[in-house]
Image (cartoon, rainbow, N blue to C red; front, side, top):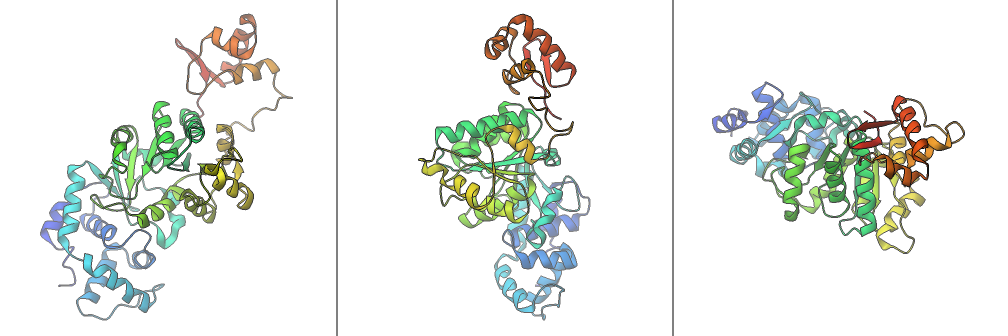
Length: 397
């Protein structure tokens, strides 16, 4: 093995040249692609090595060391830790698997984004040396540029009808108001959140534990296809990689890191969603939990977050918007400052569904003659919007 065997491998370079990427330097793309398959997600030694030397030189240092040379002294990396890491990486230091992953990406229309290009999620920097080396994206890459105003909704796979209803209600209303919904693509709470965001015509991102070309769970193949069409499926491991329990746990840190706030909708006492909540808390992200029936084991984890971790109590989309600091036009009006009729009309409207005048009058308990003028004033204030289909709450863009 020579010191530059991987980066000079003709088959690897040819395969990497087919990857859709926003950066133009082929050697950097190749180095990032190799590192994403060489080290497991969250490998702090790999992260420190890349931070200190850059992905290209870091890879060359590894190859020289495995070619018989003495491990280089790298600031922030202890020699013993590097030696241990080299033993982990050695079995994967061959060009063929990385070239095949690049070809799978090209065949599957999967792009690779890196910290050198756009749209790299800036919040990932908070993970330090545990940040991903690269992200593989199936779908609309530009969706990652909409994470400044985003919320992750996570929870139990074996969700109750209550949990799925609340997840869908929160995700649909938030997505209709321009909030990007982030989740993990799993059964239960995740799936309900993705479907509701798509149904509202909003943006949604599924961050997965395996390759972006792998559908897991298999029954979500149709949902993943819709997410890829209207949002993005994101992974930090190369295409073809198998999802494992360890990678699911490491994936959770990305869900927490990229989002402006994390909300646990429903979770048991030992739910994996508490792992995501822990990452959010450690990163200083706003953390919320939805309360459930005190008799429900499916909500014990949420109650634990409310009691022990000072999570915000989330009962409506507005609670999540408040967590995001999303009162761009000042704080919401209080009942003392706003006409009671206006409040009743606003309560009768939805952010997702268009409602006609008779429906609004019935829901608000006001007469037609009262509802019409109130809607006109609210539209002038930008609080509601109208179309041929009726009226709805205006989206906050």
